Length: 332
Image 1 (cartoon, rainbow, N blue to C red):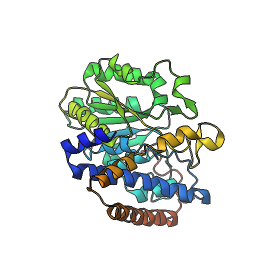
Image 2 (spheres, rainbow, N blue to C red; image 1 turned 90 degrees about the vertical axis):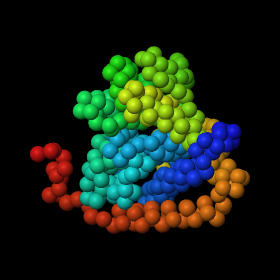
Image 3 (cartoon, rainbow, N blue to C red; image 1 turned 60 degrees about the vertical axis):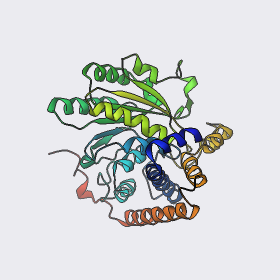
Image 4 (cartoon, rainbow, N blue to C red; image 1 turned 120 degrees about the horizontal axis):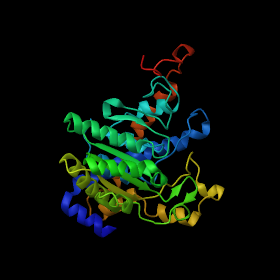
């Protein structure tokens, strides 16, 4: 992977790589703060953590405009943050507080930021995929320059909604980017026990979509693949699919590790942790004398200070009263 990072550095320059590294660190520390406080049991929302997959959100969302549409799934924290969501409003949402982005009614699985183009996240497997296609269709029909991007997991690749969406988007040349974060597991079921073919990108090719397999732990590779896909959508050339092979370090839900329950082999998890997307870039930059250990430590301290403040404020903010039960539920 060092060779691919070197190639990215030559094409994009050190500043871009440093920016992507800091963004990944921000996404990681946001989730690690949840791991720290979750045992207190006052954060009632189930949490699906993004630790290990940060390169995908950082590399893809770097190309999005503020008003571009983003649709995602239950593992949405990284995508929302990379699109510009306020960490305080996310933490407050997880605590069920009125200051949350959905006033405490959405929890971890259903954040929404319409002002950022995040119209809602779906806990239904594959549920966000046709919504992204609908948003892209609306953008095309109204002459808008907005594009849509949709993140989903390998489990969603088994849903009919994916094939329906790929076919329609391809036929109408819609400005949508499909991003499959293939972390090799749907809950605790490994990919090989669920699907006869290992390539999800091939399913897009069957619908005449450009598709590519990307190392989802290589932020430079994700960034450049996403640049091509987003550029294609903005130019009116239609949809694309990226299959990003990556790995979640924690269990399907909650702060614990699957190996504690025998769902995954610890040796397998350790192999992927050794390919940490953050360490791969930070080690490379330090070896190239483009980043110092002290500078990286200062980044983490700054990020931790911001997140600690957000978390403390969120935990202390107001719980909704009974009079708010039906507020922000129905449009009328």
